[in-house]
Image (tube, rainbow, N blue to C red):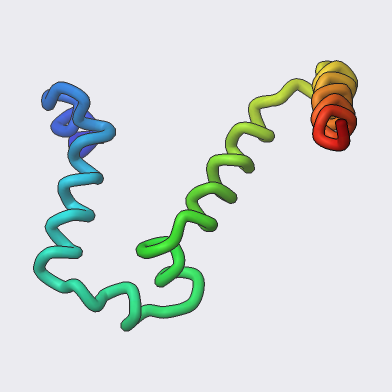
Length: 87
């Protein structure tokens, strides 16, 4: 993994290097997202795909044994918001 080792030499490299590469691609080729279109274009321009990947990763880290507690807490918050909104 020489690429990862090189990226880790830069402070914050795991975040900064991909952002820099994306900015560079968008600067040099601004119509890349419309050229690819579909899912790849949405990943390059929209936030829906990024949010979906984020939610999937967060959901993958949840322990199945804790899902009852998480669901109970989520439904309690949802119920509270619905009740308070109507008053």
